[in-house]
Amino acid sequence: MGLLDWFNNKRKVKIDADLWVETIARLPFLQNITVDEQKALKNLVVDFLAEKEFSTAGGLELSDEICISIAAQGCLPILKLGLSAYRDWVGIIVYPDEFVVPRQIEDENGVVHEYDDVISGEAWEGGPLIISWQDVQLAGDGYNVVIHEFAHKLDMLNGEADGMPALHSGLNEDEWISVFSSAYEDFCRRVDRGEETIIDPYASDDPAEFFAVLSETFFELPEVVDHEYPALYALLKGYYRQDPLERRRATIELYTTHGQ
Image: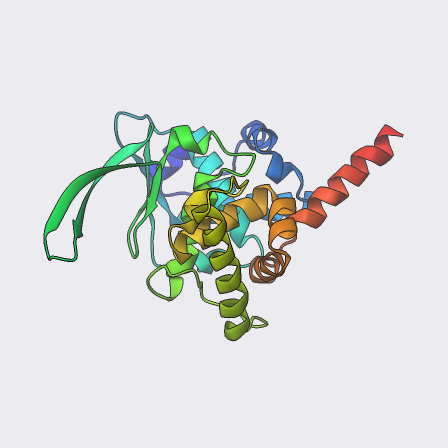
């Protein structure tokens, strides 16, 4: 029985082994995790699928590939945090490509302006996560819309997204504010003066976007975060309880040793 049958019957199923291998193979940042971590991730994905509800819009047909790819990427940040970090929401809506969200903004004179915003993903506080399948497939090299939006969900766990997720034991709030704010302000200065940055300049939009963008960069290009903001890298390492840079080094060393 496939995942779509399971969604209809509300029963737990075993993930197809070939599909799982193909999913990992398409996502280099998942290839770096250890064998034990891959097993743990797969178990987490199964539990995630048991709790969440996938649906599609814009004519996209739901498939096992879509569900597994999004779940695998989305569960990586909570590999050491547990599924409870994604509590209080269930829906994931997948569009075939970027989608339009109507917005309203009030200017300083009290005039309300309406406009359409074309986006690749959005996380609603207490509501669903909406994402573009086309952008999901662009994961890699520092861009990951899934990790980005799921990071927003982590940020919202303790209220409105503001760049400070609910901190677990071992993390100090004052340290988070100090390190995070220093890095954010520096990055904003760099963007404002027109510097080209490897980290997506969208991170300068506000603290919530900085946390989300730095999270996707942390998992996909850890050496960039570590080089540019080592104190922030250490902070994210402590929060996620993962060290993607060490994983990458271990993988390179393994391939080098075998190559000899």
